[in-house]
Length: 259
Image (cartoon, rainbow, N blue to C red):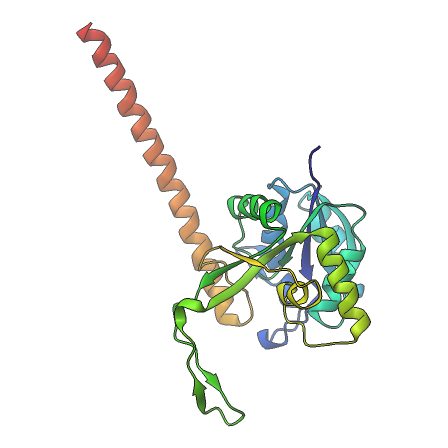
């Protein structure tokens, strides 16, 4: 029987570090609101449904000016999030009607694409719990309260964690229920919740160094440049494919003449 996969896209943050008068998820990048790009990727992916988590006062805005405007048919529910990320995730999980697997993604990561989503689905079906990330390219320092370096972990053991973070639905839902019952407020990502409250190891799978999270105004400019570069690469690939196809046709005609 085919397994049902649901994506939860988080867009309930205030984006205080952006220094803007509007939440960052609605800031425009190349004439589209930031959250559009994540929703578009999931719309074009193999996931069955998308649940959008946003601010309570922004639900109707998202419905009219994002979901309906851009024809995101896979968005089946728009729900209000909480004060912190983990609370918003829990709201999204509770809104799932039925699912075998869930992919939890930050709406502020616009560079997600169909191929990465497909890899996430394949991996979560194999490992039960996996998250996207990339090996750290920088040396990381552990510091004390006065910002003096006290330890340098081996770089080969360090990854920068990204999203989507992907789990069996029942596994992550049970872990989040235990988190909420505990009253803990230190959960910074979903893998941490599953590791702590479900005692299940989480597999790291490679995403991309361009899978950035938009946090500051500089990130907006970087994302715009990355999108432009990605578009150029797509055009070059299409040109390359046409050249190869033309070469093959010439070769075939030449072979026929030889016969």
